[in-house]
Image 1 (cartoon, rainbow, N blue to C red):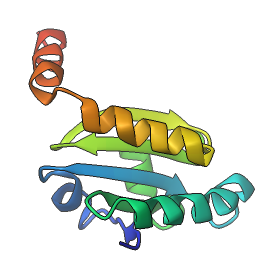
Image 2 (cartoon, rainbow, N blue to C red; image 1 turned 90 degrees about the vertical axis):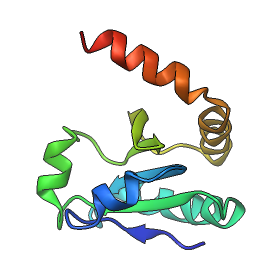
Image 3 (cartoon, one colour; image 1 turned 30 degrees about the vertical axis):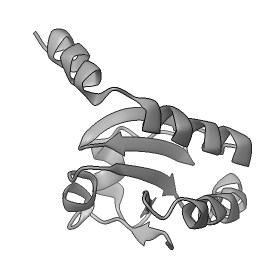
Image 4 (tube, rainbow, N blue to C red; image 1 turned 90 degrees about the horizontal axis):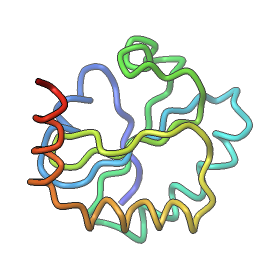
Length: 120
Protein backbone atom coordinates (compact mmCIF):
# COMPACT_ATOMS: atom_id res chain seq x y z
CA UNK A 1 0.00 0.00 0.00
CA UNK A 2 1.30 3.45 -0.84
CA UNK A 3 1.60 6.15 1.76
CA UNK A 4 -1.39 8.35 2.60
CA UNK A 5 -1.16 12.14 2.81
CA UNK A 6 -2.50 13.17 6.21
CA UNK A 7 -4.11 16.57 6.67
CA UNK A 8 -5.96 18.36 9.46
CA UNK A 9 -9.18 17.17 7.78
CA UNK A 10 -8.43 13.43 7.68
CA UNK A 11 -5.85 12.92 10.48
CA UNK A 12 -8.26 11.97 13.29
CA UNK A 13 -10.30 9.77 10.97
CA UNK A 14 -7.24 7.85 9.71
CA UNK A 15 -5.44 7.53 13.07
CA UNK A 16 -8.57 7.01 15.17
CA UNK A 17 -9.54 3.60 13.86
CA UNK A 18 -8.37 0.20 15.06
CA UNK A 19 -5.07 -1.03 13.72
CA UNK A 20 -1.64 0.48 13.28
CA UNK A 21 -0.92 3.82 11.63
CA UNK A 22 2.60 5.14 11.21
CA UNK A 23 2.98 8.86 10.65
CA UNK A 24 6.01 10.50 9.05
CA UNK A 25 6.19 14.25 9.74
CA UNK A 26 8.35 15.68 6.95
CA UNK A 27 9.03 18.63 4.65
CA UNK A 28 10.36 18.85 1.09
CA UNK A 29 13.27 21.12 2.14
CA UNK A 30 14.48 18.62 4.78
CA UNK A 31 17.34 16.46 3.41
CA UNK A 32 16.98 13.63 5.96
CA UNK A 33 13.21 13.55 5.30
CA UNK A 34 13.74 13.18 1.56
CA UNK A 35 16.35 10.44 2.10
CA UNK A 36 14.03 8.59 4.51
CA UNK A 37 11.06 8.60 2.08
CA UNK A 38 12.14 5.53 0.00
CA UNK A 39 12.72 3.50 3.20
CA UNK A 40 9.23 4.44 4.40
CA UNK A 41 7.72 3.55 1.00
CA UNK A 42 9.44 0.13 0.95
CA UNK A 43 8.18 -0.58 4.45
CA UNK A 44 4.63 0.38 3.41
CA UNK A 45 4.80 -2.22 0.64
CA UNK A 46 5.97 -4.93 3.09
CA UNK A 47 3.12 -4.20 5.55
CA UNK A 48 -0.16 -3.81 3.64
CA UNK A 49 -2.09 -4.18 6.92
CA UNK A 50 -0.53 -0.98 8.32
CA UNK A 51 -1.44 2.54 7.22
CA UNK A 52 1.64 4.63 6.43
CA UNK A 53 0.74 8.30 6.66
CA UNK A 54 2.80 11.37 5.82
CA UNK A 55 2.27 14.88 7.17
CA UNK A 56 3.86 17.68 5.16
CA UNK A 57 4.73 20.03 8.02
CA UNK A 58 4.86 23.01 5.64
CA UNK A 59 1.30 22.48 4.41
CA UNK A 60 -0.02 21.23 7.76
CA UNK A 61 1.57 23.59 10.29
CA UNK A 62 -1.40 23.34 12.67
CA UNK A 63 -1.04 19.54 12.76
CA UNK A 64 2.71 19.79 13.40
CA UNK A 65 2.02 22.28 16.20
CA UNK A 66 -0.71 20.10 17.72
CA UNK A 67 1.81 17.27 18.19
CA UNK A 68 4.63 19.64 19.17
CA UNK A 69 6.83 18.52 16.26
CA UNK A 70 10.10 20.42 16.69
CA UNK A 71 12.40 18.31 14.55
CA UNK A 72 11.78 16.47 11.30
CA UNK A 73 11.54 13.82 10.27
CA UNK A 74 9.56 12.63 13.28
CA UNK A 75 8.04 9.16 13.21
CA UNK A 76 4.89 8.54 15.21
CA UNK A 77 3.13 5.21 15.71
CA UNK A 78 -0.57 5.09 16.55
CA UNK A 79 -2.32 1.86 17.44
CA UNK A 80 -6.08 1.64 17.96
CA UNK A 81 -6.22 5.44 18.20
CA UNK A 82 -3.48 5.68 20.87
CA UNK A 83 -0.09 7.29 20.18
CA UNK A 84 2.38 4.61 21.32
CA UNK A 85 5.63 6.02 19.90
CA UNK A 86 6.94 9.36 18.71
CA UNK A 87 10.58 10.14 18.02
CA UNK A 88 12.45 12.59 15.81
CA UNK A 89 15.07 11.33 13.39
CA UNK A 90 15.13 9.26 10.22
CA UNK A 91 15.23 5.57 11.07
CA UNK A 92 17.32 3.06 9.17
CA UNK A 93 15.18 0.35 7.58
CA UNK A 94 16.08 -2.22 10.27
CA UNK A 95 15.02 0.18 13.05
CA UNK A 96 11.75 0.96 11.28
CA UNK A 97 11.01 -2.76 10.93
CA UNK A 98 11.90 -3.25 14.61
CA UNK A 99 9.53 -0.42 15.59
CA UNK A 100 6.71 -2.05 13.59
CA UNK A 101 7.36 -5.38 15.34
CA UNK A 102 7.29 -3.72 18.77
CA UNK A 103 4.02 -1.90 18.01
CA UNK A 104 2.44 -5.13 16.70
CA UNK A 105 3.39 -6.94 19.95
CA UNK A 106 1.92 -4.32 22.28
CA UNK A 107 -0.81 -5.40 24.67
CA UNK A 108 -3.23 -2.52 24.09
CA UNK A 109 -5.26 -3.27 27.23
CA UNK A 110 -2.07 -2.80 29.23
CA UNK A 111 -1.22 0.40 27.33
CA UNK A 112 -4.69 1.83 28.06
CA UNK A 113 -4.37 0.92 31.77
CA UNK A 114 -1.01 2.71 31.94
CA UNK A 115 -2.47 5.78 30.19
CA UNK A 116 -5.44 5.81 32.58
CA UNK A 117 -3.08 5.57 35.56
CA UNK A 118 -1.04 8.54 34.30
CA UNK A 119 -4.05 10.73 33.60
CA UNK A 120 -5.30 10.77 37.21
